[in-house]
Image (tube, rainbow, N blue to C red):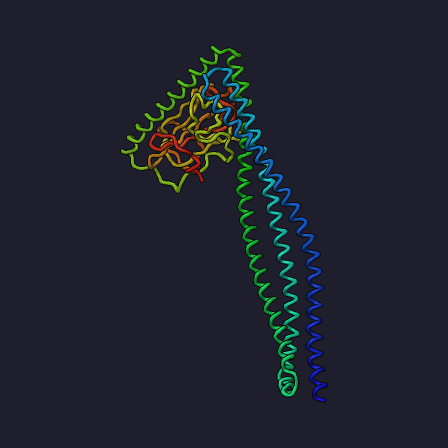
Length: 413
């Protein structure tokens, strides 16, 4: 009778154990099927990402080739033919850069999808493992409730087999818990990767804005070529005359700004300090940059450096605001096509220049506050305040430190 009870109990324990193994096997089968589908999608995305990267590598080689060509061209004698060639090469390089940025954005979007699939797959694994562990714990709890009764009965029976079965259950539980902890950690890692991917995509959105600027610059460079041929009528002598005028105008502007800033600061010394702001603001609503500070792709770099940023997507007549509170040291505006600009002097040795204005709203010796509208923008070739060699409507914006041009993007928010 006693042996019969022991055998019955052991049979029940083993039956429960086998049931759990079968349950786990079914869950594992479902999991494998789901994982195979997800893995197939991940592999497909991985291959697409590799294809995009291969295209990017090819475009980078093309960019380098254009860079090398432009470097050689800028070292050659500055004539009309060479300047046209530089404009053509710059436009071709910009087209390649735009393609590269588009590919980079697409590649990042695929990487984000890949991470999302990995997160989904991991969550499915965790859910399946939780179900297995829950079922295991319920069965182990049932065995635990039988344990005291069995301890009495097995004294004269085969206690080794009983404890072996219990140990197997404990081992399986520990194993599943270990796997669950590992999968939870993997999910956390993947979520971190997802955050990194989202952050990178945000950075690429900024590149998309830059690409928009590149498109604007491409349009400007094409317009510059049209303007250059129109003004020179294709004659080298006319080009050299235009070149000398542009250089003289640039030299006069720089000297004018430096002298006026010195005089303005002397005047301010006897009138007290300008109100201090928390920092600069953008002078227009657009954040699209078509030409950067000392931009290596500035089409007239072999003539002069570009001491500012050109803010594109700024239609003719866009309101221009003071980037910081300051004193109006200069309003250069003749009401014709000659270059027009405003110079504001600020605290801490800083000043700002707003170029290609088509209409000023302030006058010299005024004080302005941050955000105040000081002018309307311009830059349209042949328009009021545009000046020589302008490439299209935009705001030419400079920040100077003790009279020396510095990169405005290091000061703007």
